Length: 478
Length: 144
Image (tube, rainbow over all chains, first blue to last red; front, side):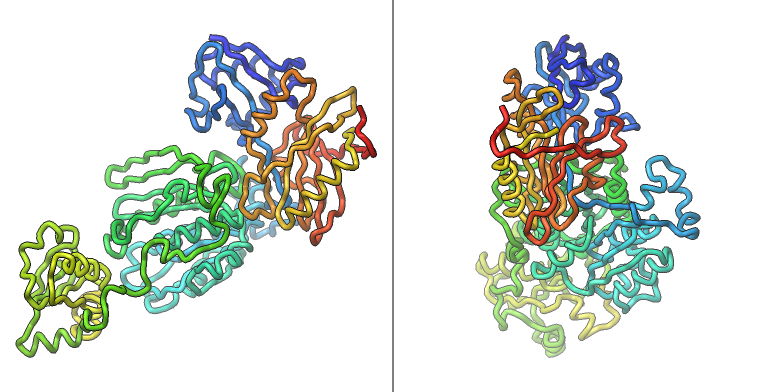
């Protein structure tokens, strides 16, 4: 089936000055194959040495970019017009390696890279020139930082303000048992230096906020997002778009993970995929829902791979694709993502020009305003009431598996998700204390119960964690 | 050799300084007469990375597609592109080279501290190995 292929001016020198050519083929791959068989010199300009279509070569079928169709597998029919369209990009700096030298030690260290055609000396120098910022030194940040350091990324920035806890060790492999109680950054810095002393490390022991994000991001080429919450994820996304940094994204939950690359010039951003955050509480965090320990390793290394590819300028990035990882079924699926022209940050007419209050955007209130002081009870007070014989009814709204780990004696378990359907099992006139792990889900439960006419409700401040701290240290904090 | 009028160059410079500290970009359109490339029209395009991008530019392929279709059969063509290098020299970066096409003229304006400095024009060598400088001439009025 012949189609008409339009050749852009710069390539006409190779097609005998023809502006359009009639070519046979069922798919774009076949049409382009026939084109380059006929005009051999075109191959070098359209394809990389590895036979991939160069990333600045766009192909349109009629008026549609094949990136949004089926890429090179896009089928064509009789009399379609196929156009090769130059994507024009450039810029003043990018991993300029002219002044970079590798020492004898570095040449030895990176020898397995140096003998690879896709890396080589030039690629290794690029890695050395590159500056990568990791947001979070936790589950995803651990493999990211360790492998990027080992691979020879010249400068690594780490943002985190947490302290290593026992519950981190099941997955945050940059931290060791002896690091518990120590700052995550101190611990991570030491491991990075041990793995590769050539790496320069910048430590930002602070919460990433709308006030500091742009300034921190400016000093880096690529940002790798290892955050575990929505406000920071949107903040990282918007700050990346505003500073023009690629955002290598990963997220994990239980057995499932996602990865993509956002914020490339022609690709979507996180907001193109999720314009609005989910309502607070709908998507549980890893702290609430748990996560398989190896999963951040799997997803974090997909992120690290994408970072390295961006630096080397090799391969096909995950930009425009959302990779879905299902570790239980061990399946990798892929969704096509499209840049949203109406996106409020990266669209044609953006409405958001500066960083906003992301806690508010995600519906997270600084304090639970619906609960005033007399709506709360401390763990110590609760214990006192229990001991005095006037014990309130204690409602535990956590999940059964959490209940198995730790519980308050006498508490009645009714998971938050089932609460609306099972309210009738509870006595609305009874003095009730509601608790969860730290007090967030129980506040939601109280909201639901108040709306249903329950009167005497109090939230256990700080949840079972506070109980463990104040009343019974044998109760496990998880 | 690329032929520009003073007015066209002024417009490129004006765009470069008004976009500073971000990069600006646009398309050079005109006709080819022997080894002369005469610019007859400029299209200033919004930097597709319409984030505050200081060191990258991208021209939407959809714009290039539209211009290519529009110019078909008119004797005019896209001759090349211009962009600015804020606080950096007016020579092509490695990134420029990797993303460049042969034949086109790449005009680069260096803008230092908000003021235009050098203006240079480049073409990619046929073997893609590097850029070579292309001469350009500025005339008071359009050469027809």
